[in-house]
Length: 162
Image (cartoon, rainbow, N blue to C red; front, side):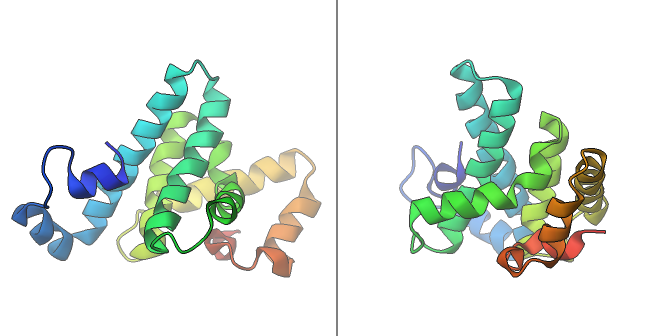
């Protein structure tokens, strides 16, 4: 079940009162659950098409981030622009194995909305892994670009790079 089917349900036309209460009392938990459900749905659809784990990982990360940009912007940003944003923003999570990537991406999205509620150990670990990956592959120029190039100043995780 994805973001929108989680919000509106597949059988009911309205949200149930307990969901509203949960949104008000623990919005970070609701968001975490929605991210995980969205990720799983996109991953399962990609695997059903016979795609490789690497392709599924990249596509799932991009699509999951895209879902949340669509929701945050109330669909006011064109989908091609959202896809471009998500492509760049998913970079640190694309090099992680599927389960680790899912957890890190989930906590990252929670961090974007509720910084004090995210598991920053997981997010920082993903970012450290990304930096190590770039250094190991002699991509210091790319890393420097992520850190310093104004083109990348909009990426939230940029301030988390070590």
